[in-house]
Image: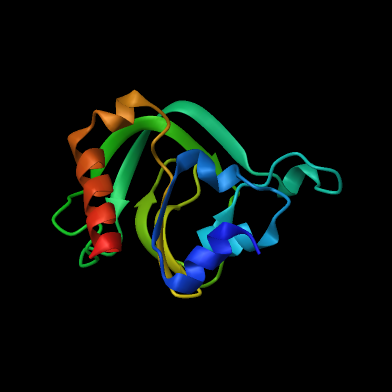
Length: 149
């Protein structure tokens, strides 16, 4: 059993950011753990089913669940980042962040659970432009605090 599965059975929380949505393409459980998957070009995957990306776009980040501890106190904000489209999401994810950016899926952040673990995924976070944004920094801080309380 991979170590990450052992950790979820112990209830260790996880925060996944940006490119992690495309990690471990051949491991089906990782999609379930993370709550979604970026579908890369692979044998047997038709072009229409692949995920997309676009670099260097403005994203209007909207707070979907204003009462969730990860986003509490945040107002909608803008980021200059990379977006993903046609990402496959698990049915049990709880949307936290959204966007109206046309090249992006509408949900760009969520909470899910796997075994005993709380899991947060935040799609933005491609580079230092987002890392320097005070709203993004507060979002990451609050996600860590929520997951570790």
